[in-house]
Amino acid sequence: MTKSNKIVLAALVLALATTGFAQDTVASNDANNNEGLAAIGKGLALGLGALGTGVAQARIGSSLVGAAAEDSSKLGQLLLVFLLPETLVIFGFLALFLIG
Image (cartoon, rainbow, N blue to C red; front, side, top):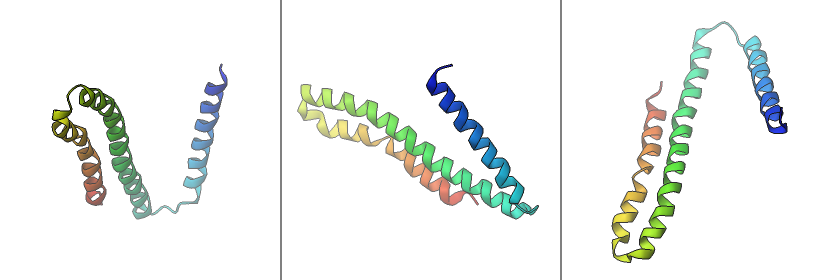
């Protein structure tokens, strides 16, 4: 087992242990549990949308620079294509407000 695998395994064990301790202190009220799950859903909606946008724009950006170097007259069209993945963050931000 490599060193990085050991670190990932230890982090996973600690993360699972902390959730067990956190569950021990929560009262048996369903309203508190649902609020926590809603908060996790909001974070995932915005975070995963931003992560997807970052990956997409990284790949598009490198291609954009190469295409702009060959033909600079198409820079406006290329910038529009570069901004299209940003809608993922906007949808994640919208979901953040819609999750109740």
